Amino acid sequence: MPGLAIVLLSLSACQSEEVLSRQSFVFGTLVEVKIRTSDRDQAIDAVDTLFSRFDQLHTDWHAWKLGDMTATSAKLSQDEWFTPAASITPVLEYSQQLYRDSRGLFNPAMGSLIALWGFHADTLPDKPPAETAIDSILRNLPGMDDIEFNNGRVRGHHPHIIIDAGGMAKGYAVDTGTELLRKHGINNALLNAGGDLCGIGNRGDRAWRVGIRHPNGQGVLASIDLSDGECVFTSGDYERGYDYENRHYHHIIDPRTGYPANGAVSVTVLHPDGARADAASTALLVAGVDGWQDIARSMKVDKVLLVDHQGRLHMTAGMQKRVVIRDNAAQEIIIAPQV
Ligand code: AMP
Ligand code: MG
Image: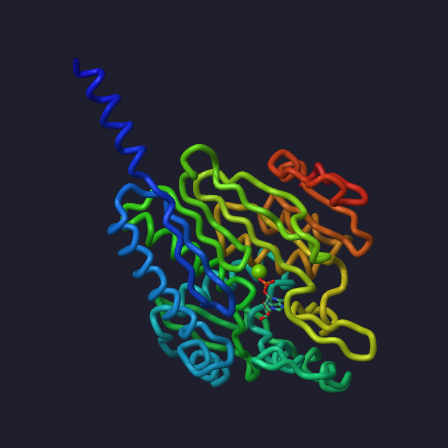
């Protein structure tokens, strides 16, 4: 009875399946990998390789601790052709694309401004910088178009370029991670970098289900079932910042004003490209409640959820189809069907 043999075989394969979970602290956050597998050794091997790659990328891409990225920034300010380390050039090239798509709102070349606000340090300052210092950087703000590429070589055309890839590095890393897991034969996994996630395959009985944190700190705002290869990235004004004289100064800076963006509380983007989802969540937080729809279109992301300062949810029709909002989580829901 060949039919029965096949049924028994697949049953035993199911029974030996497990969801293996591993965590590591990297990119300044807790990264958790879940793998559904029937081959534990293969999964452990894949996760070990993944975490050592992440550790390396964390060092390579760090915006202010000495490494390949800081070395690249130093050379970019010298107006000469050079070849950056291998891990850097693809990130720079893609950042330039995302910068253009975001019409400059996602600007990883303005590390000098982010550093001025005190975010290039493990310990945050206790007060914001002087207005004159902000103005002087803003008058001649570097952008990603100040970088020229030619066959793997790069050249900077601005004396003050400092690359801060923090707005998309996690996304780029998680994309690298899912590719690495697939190469190791992993077909079902969830990679969670501090609430920013990409899924491969499914959990077995159902899709990988992910929660979106409520920006008010009170539990979960919504949940999404991920399709194979999808990622969810959130940027929020509550993530990193400091208070001074009853005002909150956070880590996402509006390149138009030189000040922390104040047009939205959080933005979540669902997209198969983790780096794009990451950059877009940052750019749309800058664009704010008035400008996000235009920038979402130009960034080619159609599944977006924005929480404004009144607690209202704004979302695209594409996101509305995919998200389940928790009862009583929102004051009001506004759909933007044209994105
Ligand atoms: P995310 O949490 O992905 O929104 O990234 C926030 C990080 O991106 C900050 O900590 C900064 O390092 C960097 N950043 C802040 N403002 C911008 C901006 N307008 N464009 C690009 N990167 C930014
Ligand atoms: Mg981001």
